[in-house]
Image 1 (cartoon, helix red, strand yellow):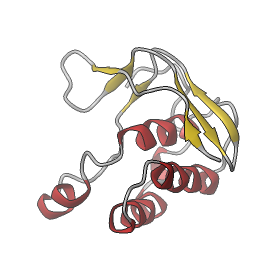
Image 2 (cartoon, rainbow, N blue to C red):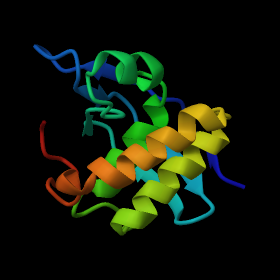
Image 3 (cartoon, one colour):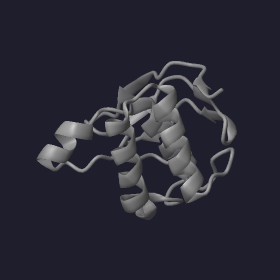
Length: 129
């Protein structure tokens, strides 16, 4: 059964309202990929929802933990390694684990599948954003 084993603990990067830095590891047990341990110091932009008024109003700020896990799996050197599709499916799995309603998790999942390709394998785990 998938579950988060630790709470999300972040601080905003100095000079940014969008980049969070993990203050302690985020540990998620995935049915799809097994244990995912995001290390302290990891930089994440969370769920990258476009800043278009209606879209951001509906889906912005709704999947913090899921966004960090997804960002981590997008990195070239994540452990475990994940394909683009696997990372998207883990986001959906984590959203289900966090009991997000279908009208939140499925549009966000579709958005990842449509708009996320450009960020996949663009950074290493400990790169600063």
